Length: 268
Image (cartoon, rainbow, N blue to C red; front, side, top):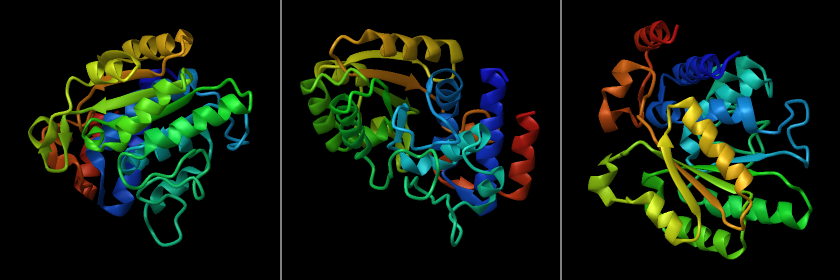
């Protein structure tokens, strides 16, 4: 399938996952779908039949509450049966509300408190170097999440250790649970901040597949001793008009039978 078809399928399955619970983190899940579609269709060296193979690319979903989008992607890629998507956060599930590497095949790092993923990704990238593994470690973080200071400690470490296999993708959807990120605690200029910390930084439309592809390609081939950052301008709830229109309210919201049906009609 094309990357556009893949992205639509991820969105449909993300909503299936959230609909099984009746509500959840709709906005931030849908805003990262296009990045996941490009990564898993064109870049991630992974094997659904051997999720823990040593010679693989790794993805750290630091904004772990967007797990339904990653679960949808992994299910489509064959890491686990699609029926698991109907068990989100239920008793005994393998798909908890925040991603957990001990429960879900294809998940490379557990997420909980925001702001920790970049530090974990630094450790994975350094471990790869020490083990002679020439693969990339990707980390998806949110713009609101960058208000957490630990991110910048991780950024300093990454630059100090010249972790040029580390690629940070910032989901800059401009909203967080309490409102506009600019009003809660402005984190801009994100590119300039990462550059000041020693990264190569670029900014793209996070819903433009070719722009994302170009940015990831440039980051992969740089190999200049600098960690890489791609700031993705995105829309919370992307792909479903009534979720896009909700603003900050879409951070965590309902997915009723009626909403699910309406959303699937938009995603045909």
